[in-house]
Length: 424
Ligand code: ATP
Ligand code: MG
Image (cartoon, rainbow, N blue to C red; front, side, top):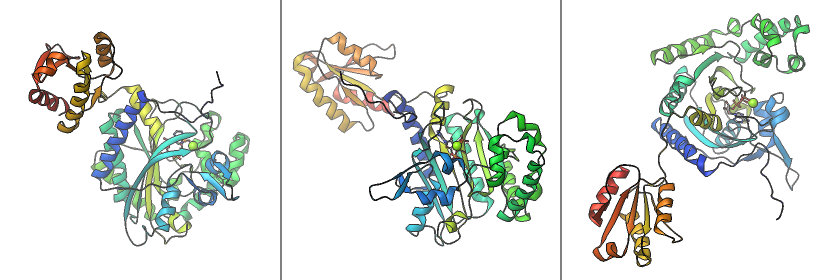
C-alpha cells in the first residue's frame, strides 16, 4: 500500500462526530449576532505581511515567532492571517466602510499561528471576531460584554467563565506607566527571567502577563497601571463598570491584564475558565481607537473581541451541558424488492411536504434486520417501512425507534402529521 500523507501538525480535521457540535455553536452565534444587529464580513485568509507587522506590532509574540509568512511566486511577502482585526480594518478602509459612520461587524473563520500544539492551542484554529467602528463610549464596550455573557447563557457555560477587565488608558498615560514599570523592573533585575529581560526594552507591559511563579511576588509589588490612568480613561472605565453592574454582570478588575497585541487602549477584557487547563482564555478583546488611522484610514474609535471556537467547543464537549440535535428524523427502508423505488420516491415526497424534516433513505439493499440496524445507528427517531402490502394499500408502516410505542401502519396524510409533530 502507498504511504499515507498526514495532516500538518496542529492543523486538525474536524470529523463528522464533531461537526454537529460546531454547527450548533455556529448557529447559536449567528442568531445571537443578528439579534444585536451585527453584519457579517468575510475577508481573505492571506494578506500582505506588512498589514500584521504594522497593526499587531513588531515585538509581539505573534509577529516575532508565530506567523506563517512566505514569498509567493511574484516574490511578495504574504502571511496566513494570525487574527482578524487587522484584515477587518484593512477591508473597512479599502471599501470606505468606516469613514464617518458606525459599523457593527463580525466574521468567523480559520486563523494560523505557528505555536506549540497542545490541548486548546493549535496551528490552525478558528475565531469568531466582532468589531465595531465609530463608537467611542463605554456603552458599546458594555454591549459587547453583554453579548458575550448572553452567549455563555445560551451555551450553558455561564457558571464556568469569569470576566476580567482592565483599562490600558490613553497612549500618553500608558507611556508614563511604562517608564515607572521599567524603572521598578530594573531595580529587580536579578529576579527577571530571560524572556522578561528581553521584553524590558521592547514591551515591558507584557512582563506583567508572565506566569513564572518565581516572579509572582516581585510583580505583585509593581506599580499599578490604574495609578497612571488619565481622567477620561478613568471615567470611561467607571461608566463601563456601572453599566455592567446595572446588567448584573460580574467581573474582576485585573490590573495585570494587558493583552498581547500593541493596538489596544482603554478597555481590555478576557473571559477565562479553569476547566481547560493552561489554555484558559476563550474570548478576549478591547478598544483600539488608533488602529484605523494607523492603517491609513481617518481616525475612528473601535472596539472588538475574538473568541476561540476550539476552546469553546471543547468546553461544550467536556462539560456536556447540552443535548445536541439529532441529525436524522426518519430512516426509510424497503422490506421487499418491489418497494425500493416507491421508498425512494416517498423520501423525495416527504422532503417536499414536511418542512425541516431530515430523511435518510436506506441504500444498498440487504436483509430487513440489517436495514433496521442501520436505521437504529442513524440516530433517527422513527423508521418508515415499505413492503409489497404497504405499496398496494398506499400506506406506510411506522416503527418508533426511541420510545415504547407500538408500530402502526398509516396513510400518507396521517404520516405527514406524525412527522410534522416530530420536527416541530
Ligand atoms: P493565548 O494567551 O492563549 O495565547 P492570545 O492572547 O494569543 O491567547 P488572542 O490573539 O487574543 O489570543 O485570540 C483570541 C482568542 O483566540 C484566544 O482567547 C483564544 O481563545 C483563541 N486562540 C488564540 N490562539 C489560539 C491557538 N493557537 N489555538 C486555539 N485558540 C487560540
Ligand atoms: Mg497567543
